[in-house]
Image 1 (cartoon, rainbow over the protein chains, first blue to last red):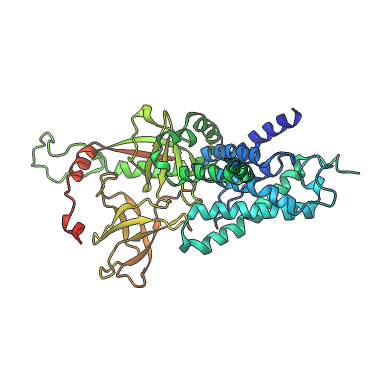
Image 2: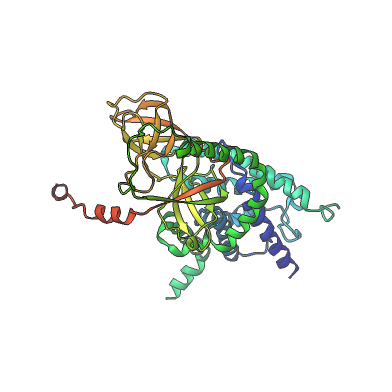
Length: 172
Length: 282
């Protein structure tokens, strides 16, 4: 129950942060910082893939409804939810994820976070920008968009975790 | 049968993935056909309300710029008043004007949400069906062309700006009158492209581009921008023209929605154009 309340609050906050602040931050060069993949990333480990994808779909639709993309964010969020268990399995630590309570940079360590979140973010952004343009002759422009947006989204996600998540539990 | 169920169980995750992708992408590709998708856009009442609250905070940052723009426009309109004209034909008798009828009506609107950096850019304005807005009407600002009304909600509507994939505004050169279609390649929110002008027509740099008024959405002569660069497309006898557009979408706050009184008549006439049968036979 506690988990449910926490994630519901996160749902609202991530949506508001994305649509009221980040969607209006348009510095040019194709930079589009996205914070909402972090919500999907930080959902509990125990969640099955199917509920994860359904939740991501709903979450993406809410983002879509504010940024007038009609399903583009939902599609990218589902892609990310689909690949999340695969990447997690691929990067699983020696004694599994059973002792870990939450998915964030403190509990899992910086290196793991870089690999796992970086890969998922790359998949998410590639899918997003490719479907958004859907034209082969804009290929280089799409690559530039990905190359510039992924690091900024990643740094932003890192910053949000440093500010809002207390690391008391991680201190051993 | 058991095999079938086993198959579905095995590929359950992938099946759900495919179904959700089909749902999302079909909505993205053919959104204009679903009128109900209006609920999932910023033209809906709840989303529009939230974005309006945001705008009521953010608009103050641009106040100075907006004031300057409105003052500029006032000055321009004041020049057009009869008071500022010097009357030459003193001998003529003024009769009641039956030669001119009103064709275009303008509704002022405030922009409450706007993007310019995405592949398709939309703008939410604070008037909707309650104010009589309909889909397909043109939107301009005091500087130039802005876009076309895309979705209409109860009290908000969504405008597809000229910074979009298939916007195809009918434009022409002010000097010379060569006409083509305005497009946007998604890179720079200040530069648009014009296609469809044959490259044996000479076009000088810094030619002003205006709307042609062919489709009845905009009146003729609304400024679009200035030609800044031109080169031939390889393998085609066409110009590739770069146009610096007149409106700055980064600071836009007030727009006008254009109602063409004779739009229905125009559409009705154009629907009667017979299909060319000779082309079908080939």
